[in-house]
Amino acid sequence: MCGIIGVENNENASVLASAGLITLQHRGEESVGITISGKEKMKTFRSMGLVSTLFNEDTLLNKLPGTAAIGHVRYTTSAKSSLINAQPFQINCIHGNVAVAHNGNITNFIKIREMLLKKGAIFSHTSDTEILLHLIAMSKGNLADVVAKSLYRLEGAFSLVILKDKTLIGARDENGFRPLVLGKIDSSYIISSETSAIEVIGGTYIRDIMPGEIVVIENGQIKKSFFYKNSRQQHTCIFEQVYFSRPDSIMFGKTVKEARVKMGEFLAKQMKGIKADIVVPVPDTGYYAALGFAKASNIFFENGFVRNHYVGRSFIKPSQNLRDVTARLKLRPIKEVVKGKDIVLIDDSIVRGTTSKRIIGVLKETGVKKIHFVLSCPPITDSCYYGIDTPIKSHLIAANNSVEEIRKYLDVNTLTFLSLENLVKACSFSTEKEQAFCTACFTGKYFTKISKNTYKENY
Image (cartoon, rainbow, N blue to C red; front, top):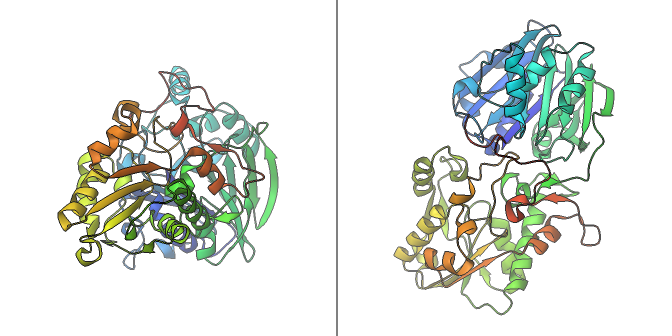
C-alpha cells in the first residue's frame, strides 16, 4: 500500500497536500515526497521516514510558491526501501516536466522493462512506477492521450496522480484494485487515496474515480474525464476495509468503521453461544470489530491493551526483525483488565503468525485464563500481487497449516476466522446488492495474469 494525494488551483497547494499526507500516513511510513508546480519550475522533495521528516517548522518547503502539488507516502511491496525509490518521480521529457505518484503493483513490469531497455531506456529507480514515465516520454501527443496509451499497456493495480505545470491527472486501473477518490475545496479539486484526507483539509468528497477512468483537471475545472480501457467489473481490494483504510474513510457508500462493526457482528453470529468475560480488541484495527462482536453477543467490551502511538504499524515494516521489534514496543496488556479472565481477543488478520503468537504469549504471562482468538477476515492463503505486502505463499501460515494446526501453534482455546461470505456482506453497500471485491489473498483467484515473471519479489 501507499497513499497518494493531488491538489490543484490553490495558493496553499503544498500545505494542503502535506496535511493530506499526514492523514494518509497509516498507508506508508517508509518514505514521503511532494512535487510542487504551477508558478516556478517544478520541484520535488523526498525523504525517508514519516511526513514530519519532510514538513516541519524548520523547513521552507511549505512556503515554496506553487498552485498545484502531488504527494506520496510509501511502504515497500516490490522494490527496495530506499530514498531512490521514494516518490513522486519527476522527469523532464518532450512533454516538459512531469511527475507521478503511484499506489499499487504493475504485474507486467518485468516484460515492459525489458522492452524499454532494448529501446535504450536508462532506469534510475528499481520501482515499477518508473516504467510509466518511460512510456510517457516515448509517446507523442497531448498528455492525457499519452497517459491513456501508456496505461493501456499496463496490467495489475495502479491508482495514480500525475502533475504537469498546472494540470493534475488522476487515473485508476480497469479493475479498481486500489481506491482513488475525487473531492473539492473552494475552487480547487483534490484527488486522494481516501476520503478522510479530503475532509481533514476542509474539502468535500464528491465521488470515486471509476475503474479505468482518467480525470484531467486544470484551473479548477475538470477538462476531461474518459476511460482509457473498457472498465471490467470492479474488484476493489477488500483488505482495505479489513485493515488499511482509516475508519472514517468512505468506501462503497459507508464508512470503513461501519464495515468493521459489521464484521464483528457476523463473527458473533458465527460463534453463537460463546461464553467469555470480556471482548478485547488488538488495537487499532480490531477495535470496531470488537465493538460489533460485543454488541451482538452481549459480552462486555474492554480495552485490554495500551498502545504506544509513537510506534508504526508492524504489518508494514520491510523486514521480519523490524516487525517483531515494533510489535513488542507497540502493545502492552493492562493486567487488572485481563488477569484471570476468559477473553474473546479480536484482531484483523493473521499473515505470518509471529506477531499474533507474541501478543498471545504476553497475555498468558499476564494471567489470562482462556483466549478465544477471533479474526475479522478469512485465512490469508495466497500472495497479493496488487499492492499489499503479503509474502510468498510458503511464508503464509494459513497456506501451510489447517485452522486446528494454527490454533495449536498460537496456543489458544479456540480460533475463528470470519467467513468470506460474511466479510463480503459486511463490506458491501447492502446485502441485496453486494459490491465486487478482490479476494485473491483468500481464494487464489486473480483478476490479471500471474506468471513467474510477475513483479512480486524485490528487483
